[in-house]
Amino acid sequence: MKLTTNQIFDFNKHEDDSYESEIDYLNNKFSKKGISVDEIIKKLGSFNVAIPSWALGAGGTRFGRFSYGGEPSSLEQKLDDIGILNSLTKTAGAVSLHIPWDIPSDVNAIKEKAESHRILFDAMNSNTFQDQPHLEHTYKFGSLNSVHKNAREQAVEHNKEVIRIGKELGSKSLTVWLADGANFPGQLNFQTALQNTEDSLKKIYSDLPEDWRMFIEYKPYEPNFYSTTIQDWGTSFMLANACGEKAMTLVDLGHHLPNTNIEQIVATLMLKGKLGGFHFNDSKYGDDDLTVGSIKPYSLFLIFNELVYGMENNSQNPDLAWMIDASHNTKDPLEDLIQSLEAILIAYAQALLVDRKALYEAQQESDVVKCQELLQDAYRTDVRSLLKAARKETNAAINPLEAYRSFKVRKQLIEERGTSSRASGL
Ligand SMILES: [Mn+2]
Image (cartoon, rainbow, N blue to C red; front, side):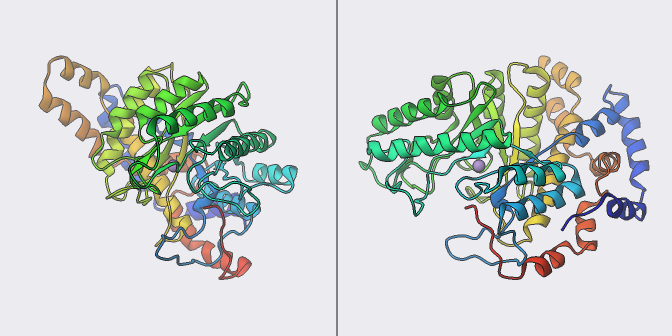
């Protein structure tokens, strides 16, 4: 199914427009500080987040999985779902594919389908954390870090194939996340594992086209519970530097130990021009993959505060590849993604409202109280009217979640695809 511009237009006609007076109020308040609300609305309207192909079906845990019905069972249907999200929000204009599940059987047909939904191909994701039926060598004991040369070579070849597929589709980046690590002390020689990983990454990097980037994702634990070879941003940063200019670190919000100061990691990487990609989600305990902003919205704001500062001041850092990386175990995935996109834009808008000149002055005077007040004044501002204005200007639904429900999208998807269709990709 596909939502039309007319449907969205008709929906917007019946929406309450009282948000416009809220914008007048914000305009009044912030123009005195030299902050343009119109500029912020423009920035919100042009912000785009990639949707990973694995986020459109039920995620589940190792304890169980509960289907929603109407899940996309082919790459074409996954693009249709992202098309629906993009029509409603105009913020989801890119897809991030996962190979081997999303290998297109007809590249041109897939490109046409994406084009019809105005969807670009963002970072390609390789997968060496599971064995596939046709593979000769197992990844049970690692892939790029493996003590077995055959497994390492197979994993390098797989990543090169992902680059080849991405080139055909028009993608410009490869994301490498490795499950490689050990469950028990003594299982792996740390130094050999790290060296093997570096050597393997360099081989993949040597196949990277000139205008591509390679993102190296890190994670402290899980699926291995004693050690992960690329455990933290420092290890990723070191490997990216060893590979070269086109290699960068990718920050996934869920891939940190509890209470890690993620905003400081963001600032450090942007200062060094090495922050390449960003995966949004939220968590209470670990890599919970919950809806963005559902647990720690203030943390998300502080992270965006550093991202905005970096985007305004660190020209050495290239544009970031934004993606939602969450798993949908309880909610309709499309509703969950709409909520995540909303939370991302809210945090972005709040960070854009920070009075940076006043903050700089307060920092020079070591006025700690004032520094906190300035940040929290922005954080405590209700910016939802700005999101509505941005959506109105881009012909998105002013209230995407309400629109999704009023169009009865899930019901139609179940009618089209049935109740037992199952999304692949993880
Ligand atoms: Mn991730």
